[in-house]
Length: 349
Length: 275
Image (cartoon, rainbow over all chains, first blue to last red):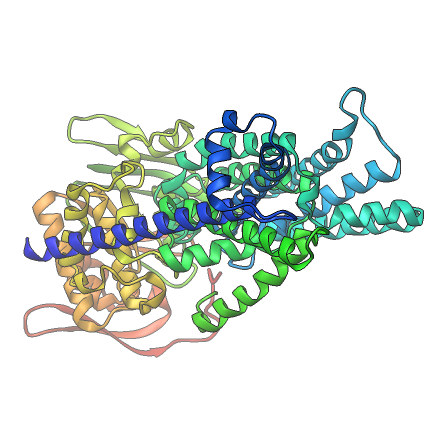
């Protein structure tokens, strides 16, 4: 009995460490978010940011209210949702493929989104009533159809990780070529517009983009929570998972749908944001292990943190002009990844 | 729990892997499945636990006389596992993959369908008791990817035991273990069978170990069941020679135990049934 008490205490202590990691993550995210709202062409003290956010009524008619609520908050919140969506999509991609190199982009979903956007820009497609949403909507539809393609192949041929990766690479090449074709056909002005879209940038963010991406994220969460233990069990290999009665194939297909939705929701409005879906899950895994009860939320926090910090950095580097955030995330993400590779000494495989 | 296997056949593509297997087991029987590589031993375990498509029937009957076929139990698409399915635990040959989960977490996954959001003390107690039983308590907080093959095998076994099965199907559970642990594990399984009336089917390659553990031996060759009898009756010079195509000696230890010593392989044309 003494021995089993020791084991239980060890387990509980490890749980507490993980909960603490989650709290720290949440705190860091909160600070980053407030700082991001404070920083911009005109710097606002953090205390002012806080009071404008909590008591907007008191600032009626002031410039600060417009800056915080109409300009910066939508951007920051979009960054939050995009960071969280890509990070969670990345975790689950790595889980269902049991491959640490997988990311939400492994299946070519973002390339498809880029293609959809490029088509909309090239042909000047404008939907009735919601003309402003034509480009993101086309990107979204294109991204979903690409993942539907991967899903159909997986369904017909059985969803082993290898089949999925292969199908994804095929999609990636297909849509990249189509994207290049569109760029080749486009006039210089339109080409510039397409290239700007492809760089992920928060300048495209607004309340609507936040609402749509946020709604997708919130809608996906309950499904993830329901399968938390199953996803954890999948980590021990297909054979073992099957022997434990897990419907491995169905679980993979279900996750594929959720990952596609998250990724499409994230990239359709702000363009391709690199690296978060790959790096954030790795950082989180290093801190809390593979128990998905902790891995999913901490990955989301890491994703948000990197994304918001990238946003801050992009504002500081070029005040007023804001470097596209997609460029900055990769620049931040690469050293992170190098550090992880060096620290893990081959533990990544 | 009683197990009845009737006319069981499995095909991978067009080629048969198992053909017309028939046998039944009483509760509390210890059975070893033996045979050359590719004879269909692992497939037999998978078919019994409903993990491969098979024709014929596998029927479990509990002490109350309730009968259920494993295939109807599997085809039900409801999320909840039937009682029959959860009373069978199968430990695959590959066991647990190298993963970042700790051994304790891996064992807890054995009953993932019953775990609440918070893992209860009762669950932790039972899981740690299984670790104790197999002598791997000290590995509880180690992650699977830092373990040796044998240690992972023990962790997998602890997971299978944690599911508290009535029928335990183990595919070469001792292949990576040292001599001490081979005996420890087999004696422990023997104890579980005695104490709890669990039925155990083991796939093995070590004939002497099989003789030590099992009361009954099934010999498979090229997908067919060619012998099914008491170990003394089956482990003869002729039968071992016939199944494995070797010349072997059957020796008797001072305590009466059977030992099978391979002497030399017979002709090389052998290979029938190799995958």
